[in-house]
Image 1 (spheres, helix red, strand yellow):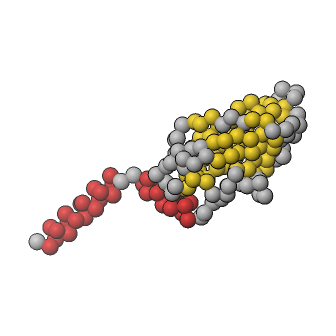
Image 2 (tube, helix red, strand yellow):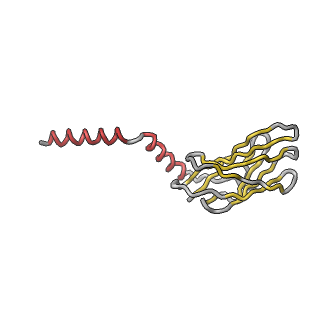
Image 3 (tube, helix red, strand yellow):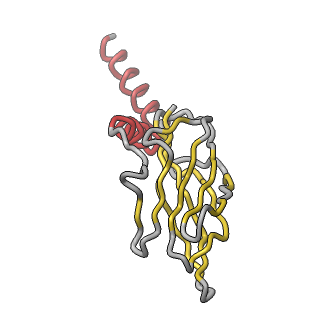
Length: 148
C-alpha cells in the first residue's frame, strides 16, 4: 500500500512541476533580488550622464508609484527635445508622455507620474528623442525605479 502512495505522490509532483512556468519562477526570484538591492534614481548631485553629455536626474532618489515627481534634463545648447516618454522595463505598463518645458537654452524640466505595480520595485525607462541644430536626431534612454 505504501508503494502506491509513493507512486501517486511522485506522479502528482511530476504533473505539478510540469504545469508550472519556469520563467515565472525565475522572474519572481529575480524580482525579489531586485527589490532587495535598493536601487536608487539619479539625482542632481549624481545625475545619469550618457556618452554625449546628456544629463538626467529626478527630484528624489526614491520615488513611489502614483506620486508626482520632477525630471530635469540638461543638454548642450544646440540640442532640443522633440519628445519623451516613460515605459515599463520589466512589465508592459503602456507609454506615458513626458512633456518637458525649457528653463534655459540647456535645461528642461517635466512633471511625471507612473502607476503602481504589483512588484515592490518596478523599473521604468525614460526615452527622450532629441534633435541637434544640424537636424541629427538621437534617442536617449535612462533608468527610473519606482517603489510601492
